Amino acid sequence: MLLPYLNIDEVEAGCDEAGRGCLAGPVFAAAVILPKDFSHPLLNDSKQLTEKQRDLLRPIVEKEALAWAVTPVSPQEIDEINILNASFIAMHRSVDALKIRPTSLLIDGNRFKPYLGIAHHCIIKGDGKYLSIAAASILAKTYRDEYMKGLAKKFPEYTWERNKGYPTKAHRAAIAEFGPTEHHRMTFRLLAEEK
Image (tube, rainbow, N blue to C red; front, side, top):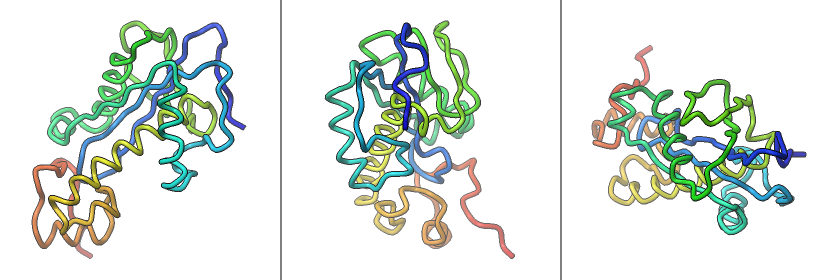
């Protein structure tokens, strides 16, 4: 069972990102502040849920959260500063966009760049431990998937509606055949190594 908070006396924002391992598209991050008494039987790490369950939970999180924000960092920025720093910047932007200033950040993962002097706690597999991080994982994932589905209509040969930019065989085969787009991360290994 996921925990509602780490410290009841803090205004906690859960933070998570989606799309870090992709070859194309932005990385998206979300920050979510939930009410202390919030619960939902389905809410879990977005990777443990079906697309239908994530799509069901997204409007519930948006309606019930005290504050939430989702922000992207572009492939060009990722290429400039690297994906780890881009993930941190995306989280910083989301925290910045919250209408309530948190006093503590719950970060999914083992590393984070401190932001605005707000205390933070890195929690490995945090999206499966705390409700606010799980909620952030759902928003980041659904917003990114929606974005990639939109791009897929303009670039149908890459089948982003199915692979969402991840390095599947089909995606790499399309890059080999058609070349990269402006939405690809040029500092990533776009083609699999020859055997």
